[in-house]
Image 1 (cartoon, rainbow, N blue to C red):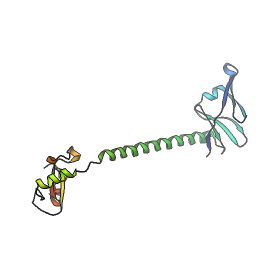
Image 2: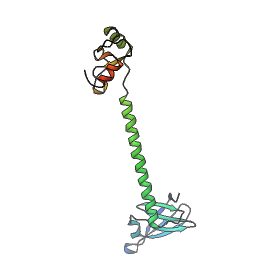
Image 3: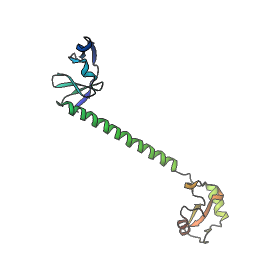
Image 4: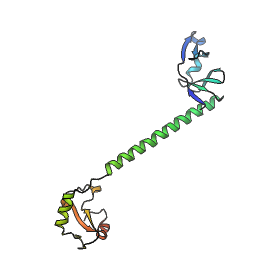
Amino acid sequence: MPLTRATSIQVERAGFWFFAEWHVTTSDGASFRVPSRRLRDTSPVRAGEQGARTLWHVDGEWYWDTDGLTAEEVELTLWDRDRKREARFERLRKVRAREEDLASARRERIPDEVRAFVWHRDDGRCTQCGAEDDLQFDHVIPVAKGGGNAPENIQVLCGDCNRAKSDSIV
């Protein structure tokens, strides 16, 4: 990875007014001097080099570069990181919302005692056409429209009548 966040950076101000500068010391003893006005920039500022590494200051943060990047490349690399990070969080927000929607969309099974009561009440026949095969339990008011599992809201329908009814309220 071309840029890594620099840690354990000590920064001390030296001088005054127009001649002020910052003395930057790294944890491994490297020392750099940076004019005070440069650290106020939000664009990347090259603080110095230590061996094959370059220390950059960008918008209040310090980064080590091992690939010899230009200031523009440092800026683009950090912009790309932020963009990808935001896209990842947006994707995760959508996944979480979908899972929460699925969890709330799951409806409870019609209780066995309600099924037995409705079966007996409807004589084990389709309440629309009287068919005795391919029978299904149907919600008179669909769950999606606020119907529940009370016996008054459940009826026996054959597959054809149930498909014809779909999610309408009959």
